Image (cartoon, rainbow, N blue to C red; front, side, top):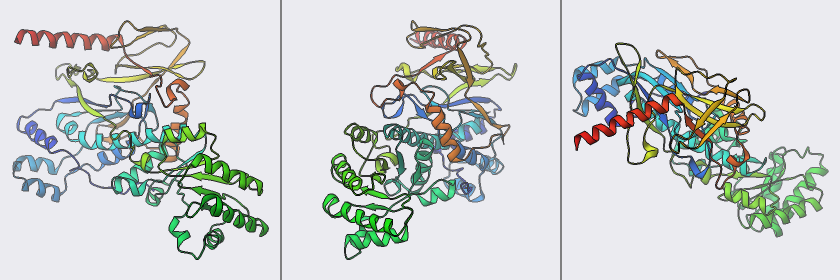
Length: 491
């Protein structure tokens, strides 16, 4: 089941609408190019995971102003009737290109490109950034947590700590894309057909006369998913012994013993898990799941693995669903080109800044990913103009667009190219079918396998090169020189 259609047309900043009225009052059929991209990898990592495209597609498909929307805008007393009348028939007529969900991505490259009349391109800015920023952030965080777990299952348990229902629903969706094996969020499970998982709370234990009775009752109800929470009273003196007693009785009764084990939610997880394993193993239950929760993140999981913790399943909540150490993805939406009415070519536009990282890349662009032919690993990404082509049989020289003396020659025949931006909308019509969340999760897993291990490490990772083509770099340099000359002339 996919999400129910919701009209998010007014999910926008007011200035998008006031600018639209300004364009309407000063008629223009100008076609523009806007790029949505980010400048810095989240969480100190070397990559991000693109997510949220399916919701962008739904938003664009349903983009229209309802009678109630028009009435509300009229009540603000800042919009004229002729503009409001125009909005009654508004719909998106442009093109959108995007990097598919689950793809690993890097700073400064367009995750999504809008080519449309300026009023349309302006309106969609806020919602696109809202959707992509949130889900890409959580998918990236989940990917890091999954990496730290070294093959153990990660369950997303963050709904009650998410910043509202939508953040809980779509954050869980993004966490699944990033590699989680399931979520506690039942509505996300229904909406996106992903596995839902869970155990029980301490209150279940406390509501029974004793811990053993609580465990036994739960085991009778859910014999094939019997994960018992053992830290309500005392993990080693009470919880684990009572869990072992229940497991012994299940075994004696001929139960399948499928998906059984314990969960620890507090205390020294490394010490307790090792002692619990010794007890379980001595009783003949060495294959039991030992699950842990308790404010986990990738760094704590990595530390616990280093300490030899006997945990093989992890429930991660607050720090995943909120991305606790990195509150925002930082994606932006910038004008990159304007179509020339006379020759139908795009005139590049550039935004300047005192900070070199904030200077935009001009023009109607695309991205080619360069893979090492032998290993399948990513060598670099190359941002270029949309009409540029490259011959894989010929040498390719790439260079850092800021520190231009850093150059690399990739010999012809040793690399392959893949264009990352794919058509999503053409002339207002959707031409793209979103995969299921679990299919996107598989895509993400394969994508992460194309990263070198040095770029996956949690601390001080090696950043992947994102370079500009010679042609694009020349245009950018010429624009910078032109703008600099104008500034000097004004002094």
